[in-house]
Image (tube, rainbow, N blue to C red):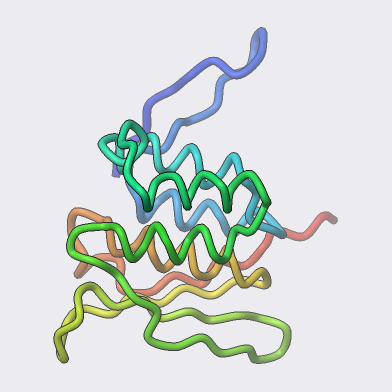
Length: 148
């Protein structure tokens, strides 16, 4: 895992994540996925995607503008090569768990992430599929940090 530092405000530095699994883990610190989380990940992990001007990119942009993050994440998954798809979504005790498969073949790798927000669970599972070493990142339980 590697992180680089970027300046966020005068005198304050924040780690800019360069590992998709670490980024997925950091989503555990948020109660709800926000548009800026998705854009940051697209620019960092899918740079060709952020520059493309395809039909799926235009649809993705429209969904992001409408704050339809679940649908935007689904479009992003389907347009990634190889495509990703949601294998299952479950909810238990107020937590969503999403399982995302790489490619259509039976036996293809499946990644799971949990979160209290559906879009965050889906996005975290998708990010895990982008990790360089999938064996290290098969599951993440993204629990939000609670204020004391």
